[in-house]
Length: 174
Image: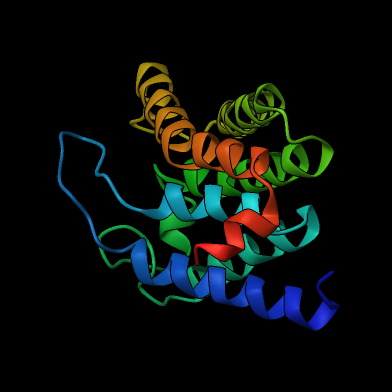
């Protein structure tokens, strides 16, 4: 069981990791690829819901005050209220939904529902506040598919194998 201080420090470290990895861009078409989404999923998977959302909030506040932590080394309120603002604000929903899904159940389909809820809430926020983005629904479906495949291959399968083993036997070979 982690203490409150440990959770806060871990949330701060994940916010820092998000700030460090987000600016680096792999230019592919209109929507650049960054590691930000991966870190947001990781934040949701590793922290309780309140701390996951707080960690994303710290990252967004750092960018809001002008530090260049967003994609392409930019920052400031213009980014949050610009074309990619809905996507960035949607990180709240994504981290919270993934964290809630992890907290409620260890079943893979609950995680999938959490991810879909996060993406859906992000789209609702985008259309409610009329925030124009260049991200199509198809690209979201592709991103979800790739993320789910990576999570399934590198996360779920090894964890399932480890859960089936006797802990004492596993420790003997460390």
